Image 1 (tube, helix red, strand yellow):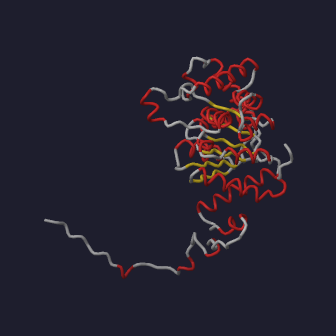
Image 2 (image 1 turned 45 degrees about the horizontal axis):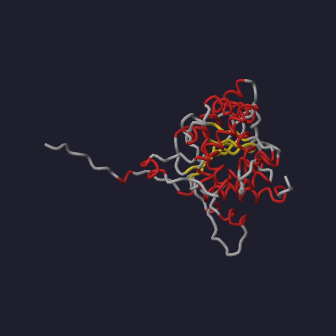
Image 3 (image 1 turned 30 degrees about the vertical axis):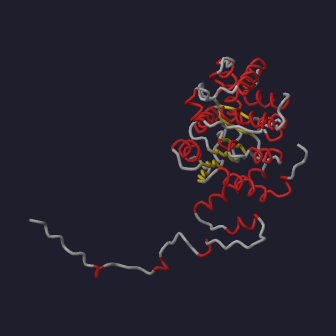
Length: 324
């Protein structure tokens, strides 16, 4: 026999005036339609003051304030940023003084070097893997491993070693769009953080494990020094799901352990989806002491140009290229 369920008496429902309720969405936060011919700054101002649009403007505002106060703007990214054609955008920011440090994974070196060398990169992995040719391009690995070995002998980090090799080497017809070469030319610290076995040049006989480890570890020490001075600045993590969030967290722990005050800064994570390590190790944990974490979700090839253009609009003539 089924149990009898008593009916709900809706005549006893308690109500209150809607105007007294706290509402999260207001007319003042609505966007305005785009006006043909409007400037990019006007387009940004026309966006709603809600959710992702509000976060985008908050990230731009934080970066502009940091720049105006002489604080650090650190840009971290996975190789995908280069593969979707955004190296020229980063180079432009560097030349305008809007980058004080870069951190990247090892694959970024591969694609940056190949584009500088031959204007193309990114092989079709699946069929190459089937036939046993994946990652076996001769020049890429010989040049990278040679640069890293030379940098090891000179006491350089991996970022500086590869950057100087592209900047001063022959055969790099497209070096002007190289992030690494531009960093070497402008003397901007660039750190490369590798996991042994993750990059194609690690498979080649010219690879030297000692050189890979030593140069990447020097870059970790350089990054820790940058993070120690991040108070009031902004860190961007663009598309690195594991390596950079883990390395950044350890650099921050080291800096704080040594007595550096790194409490109030903005950490911005940009990726296609929300993932555990960037959310926890970039956005949440590091900003608990008074900073702000922002998560922006979107395709790099759309989101990063929006960030860069918004930052240029905010800082205005102060970011004009000055023959750096």
